[in-house]
Image 1 (cartoon, rainbow, N blue to C red):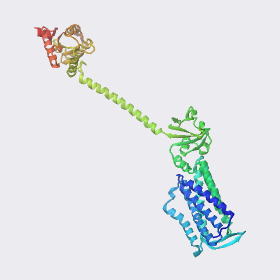
Image 2 (image 1 turned 45 degrees about the vertical axis):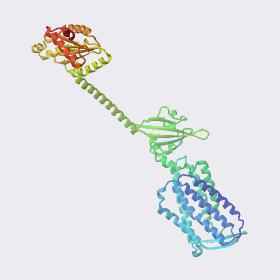
Image 3 (image 1 turned 180 degrees about the vertical axis):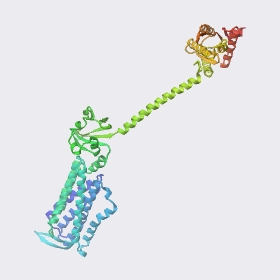
Image 4 (image 1 turned 30 degrees about the vertical axis):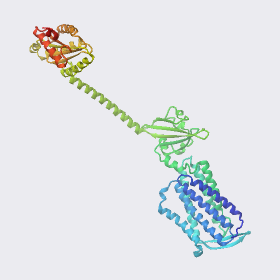
Length: 540
């Protein structure tokens, strides 16, 4: 096998090396379409390298072999380009098994027909060697399938370019450079390939398209290094920002708007052409009194109210961006409409307030019910039930702490005569006046109870029997001087009192009450309006 030196092959090999390097870098990326781009660049590598090897050969069979190898890359480049643009712009819904089969059927058929061209001559009607300028070249006459495949390839490329152009229009200003670089890298080989096809010569010499693949590879490598191509791609902005319900605003270091999404346009009620380049301080002057406060060097989260009709509440998060030298490069502002949440919170606060009011009301009602359960409704003194429960506790405490407890049992003398003479209403007034007198002469810690009918009991913890008698005398004198007005009458009464003490006269509630009751009846037997102690009865 003889090899000839052909200068054009050097450029082809260089182009193949660059596209192979770009393919390896793209393969290592994880962004949508990165592996398809790697396959596209690899197809360009096969195309350039196959063309270079064909140019170095001097034999017809050797040239045809590398021409067939080159066809693998040339036939698959255009459908791979279209597939890459669909993935890059995330139109994956069009990438179905049926569409993939249609897209790659013609390239596969082209490769197969190229390898079997000697039997049907559909790709090239004739192939032969010619000598030109001292180099042995191959003369090719294009067949019908070659023209059909060429038209299919250009159609796929045109559709891919349209998809990229449409994606560029949908992208924000921050990502538009990536689309421009990508379109430039694709348009250069496409334009020169089209130029080569228009000026096609039967002698296969200098084909511009494979050479420019290296230029495309350099452009892609530049895009990766400078614009984070295949790392942070525009489609991420389209999916994650444009479709967000939250308003997104991107500012530069001078607080000027450089990007936004549709939700932000709705919040600001501005046209897109009026937003770019505007100062955020101007945009938010009606929303907040001091907009400068949100442009600090740290993340900020705050809430604001939009003075619209109806007014809305927004949750604002501001995140600053810094370069590798920690210099501020811009800010990301995310506005979330929290009006519904605020409304729910307000309703919840109102419900909580109503619930608390109801709980307070229930508590008061419960307190009233408890009071009613332990209070006598006429005199408002504690009732017999409360006396029995409380006296047991008081005696248990007195036993633990070893102090005496005295009780005075009081009965109104001749109370039936008051009811019979003046009526029950007059009797009730006497009972109430007695209750007021008992409360007025009770110490803190004492408690007075209506024991039943006209009988009352005063419990006096931590007091001796002698002191209890002294207090009983004072209490009786005070009650005897009591005058109750009833119509034209002034009612008065006398009282018989019996005194008993714990533990001297009993060690239980029942025993103490029995002792006091006996002492009280002893006071009545003595002529009423008397005070008797159970101790006096035991000495008699």
